[in-house]
Amino acid sequence: MNKTAVIGVKHFFKHLIYNKISYFFKKYYVHDDFNFCSKNDKVYIIECKPYSKIKFWKIIKII
Image (tube, rainbow, N blue to C red; front, side):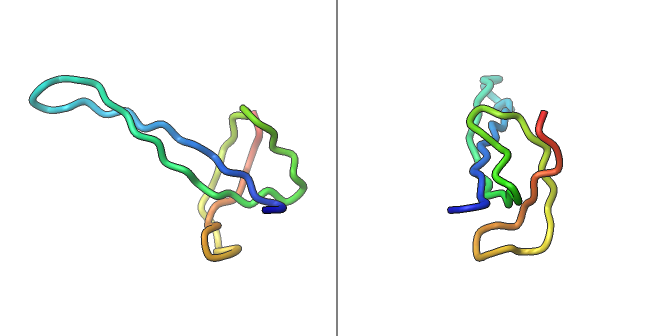
């Protein structure tokens, strides 16, 4: 997977009845032009044209 980064996003939500805070993970396959992204980097991504069957996102900025 050259020029691809896998970004994991953690979404939090609160249950309406039990008031328990839960979370789930979602993985995004992101296009990285020059392979700048490394492990544990925080990034901004944006939706764009499809680069492949599973890549619909592009890295805007590495924090």
